[in-house]
Length: 239
Image (cartoon, rainbow, N blue to C red; front, side, top):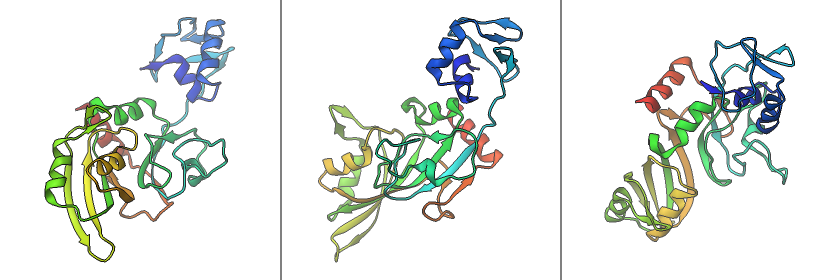
């Protein structure tokens, strides 16, 4: 079940706020009955008309993108910089990124028009795992990794426990490769965690989004999720 104005916005009737105005004006019917209540929720089986015109709902779309550097994780950008939506061509539905990756961060990013699933994948209470590979400046050792695993204080609040695996140290560049899995998604969290323990991030890639890996996707490439993968995502957040 989704709010009526949200369904209207996804179907391209108008923005969500404008859709609310249309509802309040008595121009929307659900199963033949005029609806003016903004909190009304509808299912996929309900028949919706706007000004007596049947609403055509968008098909749900799920895309995994290997986000390249120097792209913005938004639908559009006022500064006319490249966005992740520019990477995905030939999609008629209005999709948007699930969460964000920084301008200079690469890797797995999910794009969809499924608002309910997007909410669950990004809300901290659902603890959806995301794995990153970090190139950190300095020789990081196991004890520092333990600090991150147990949680550290950022902006007065402890981070959730993480899984950390130190992969290698390059003496020539004085840098350490680390794999870290988080179950929350604060703003710039990985960079801030490593900075807090004295190992600023030189390079950051999200290796996987849950079980969805970018192993077979080159930078800038994308693919549709299979129905089975979508069902797996739904099961993970619903469990």
